[in-house]
Image (cartoon, rainbow, N blue to C red; front, side, top):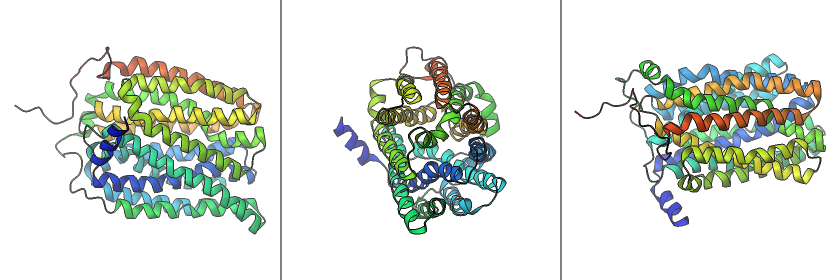
Length: 419
């Protein structure tokens, strides 16, 4: 097993390594606001519904950039677009905590959402093009692993720095603001990694009509979009408030929350690295459904327990299992999609996710303000996850070449077969 893994690592191409280095920096940059922004807004006396509305503005950015991003990534070289994404993320992250009103915060989060999502749309198609069949599953797992592994350092270090600055400045609010703003250095450093990638031509031939390919493959696109939209509906309700869950239910400080998120990301990193091994034992769909269903009992523990140690255990295991399906899904989407459709497939999934997160954080915050019940919130999310697992099984099995339900079908929009 490990010998196979080492061989896969030796096959990874230099441009893929450069991408992974940039992705690590972006992962650390993402982890800091993901861990501490909600706590910062809570200290500023925003209600949970207001916090949810600020967070959902980033999802609007994802929705707005998704289809334009498809066109850009299909028609332009990827490295300059990654550099543009990093520059925009740097600017938005730097100014975010210094903005004075909810409207300004929402506008900034929308801007950051556009920048981040352009980067996200690029990941799977780029890695698919810059990897071979033998090492591809390892590359996809490693991509999420380095992104999340760097997030361990970001969340852990951020929590420690918040604690240290609080003592020096005498204000936890100021400490959180400085840590959030300083995280803008990380996407700026990623520019130097992405700028060294050598890609001489756009990924998609201009002879391929993207709109025609979308229309001709609408059923294929829908098979992937529907399960992910259901997952996103459940996640958007609850996941943005898990850091506040530990604060409200167990009275934990930002430093402790940072350590918890670092530990979660460390376990998720292990899960990402093991995802190629899971995939070799099961089919694409079998692996995803197994991991999603396996996470649900731990979510229920998290919902009802009043024991801090048990809550931490459930939080860590649930997150690692659920997120380990991510690299497998990306690999599967790229494998099932023809040339000219891969960027669109990722973008449409992102659009579905964005629409769900436009409403989810606001609705989740409203539920918490109204009922003060994290158990209700988490049980609702579990219901969505069960429905998502069922739809994944029913809709995607016919596309899985390792499934007995596999039905080979012609894909439109890709290169013409040889005459």
